[in-house]
Image (tube, rainbow, N blue to C red):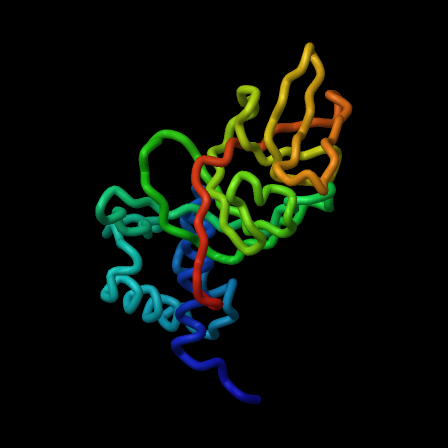
Length: 203
C-alpha cells in the first residue's frame, strides 16, 4: 500500500488543527494520532513539532490542549471559507469547508466567514461568479445592505430591502426577479463586508 507523502499529511494535520482551534476545541496530541491513524503517538507529536518550528502553530508548554494558531501579522486574521453561496435563484445551502482566508481584523470581537459566489444575480453590485464574499455574522441588517440569507434550507446572497413591513431579497441584475420570502422561514446569516476577486485561476 502506498504511503501518503509526509508534506501532504502535514498539510492535512494543519487544516485539522485550524478547524478544531477555530471551533474552540484544540485537540490533544493523542486526538491527532487517532484522527490520522498513526500507530504511535510520537508520529503525531513529530508532525506538530514541525508545524510549530515552521511558525504555523504555537505550542503552550505544560497544557494538553496547548496548541494555538499564531498571532495574525499586520492586523490580519484568518476566517473559514465555508463553501459556496448562490447569487441567483435560491439553492441548497452548501457548507463544505475549503480552508481559511486572511482578512483585515477591523471587528476584533465579531465572527466572520467567507463564501465563494456562484451565479450572476449580483453583478450590478460588483459581485461576480467565483468571487469570495467576507461575511460578518449577524442576525439582522439594515435595508439596502448586502446579506447572506437562508430561506428554509436554501441560501442566497442578495440586497436586503424592507418595504412597508415586507422583506425583499433583491438581485442586482434585471434578469433575476426579487425574492419575497416568508418571514417565518427567513434567517439572516450575516452582512457582506468585503468582496475579493482573484485574477488567476487556482489563487
